[in-house]
Image 1: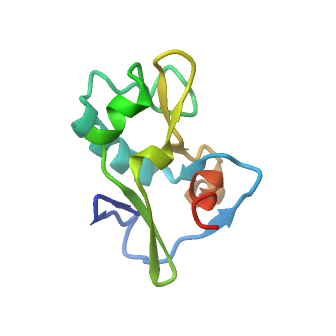
Image 2: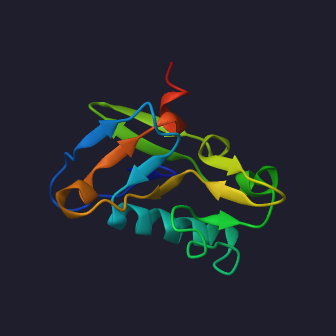
Length: 128
C-alpha cells in the first residue's frame, strides 16, 4: 500500500492476501494499513476535520469532496509487479449534504481475515 508514493509495510512480509469482491463498493484494508492512511489524511485535511469515529465504517469530513480532493494524495496498491493508483477523486464518495466519505475503510473482520485486503469497486471500476 502506498500514499503519495510512500510505501507502508505491515512487517517483514512483502505479500499479503487479498480478495477481489465485485459485490463491494469499497476498499477494506487491514487495521495497521488503515491507521497509516488515517494519519496521512489527518495531516492533509486537518486532524480536527477528519472524523473516523461517528461512522463505524468510514472516515468522513463535513466538506464537499470537490473541496477536499485537492488536499489529498493518491493511494496505491501493488498487485504483483504493478502499482494501481487511485487519485483522491476515486476513493472519495460524496454523501448527503456536504459530507464526504473516504471509500477506503478498516477491514473489521476478525481473526486472520482481518489482515485481508478487500478490493471492491472503488479500485475495480477504474481498471476495466
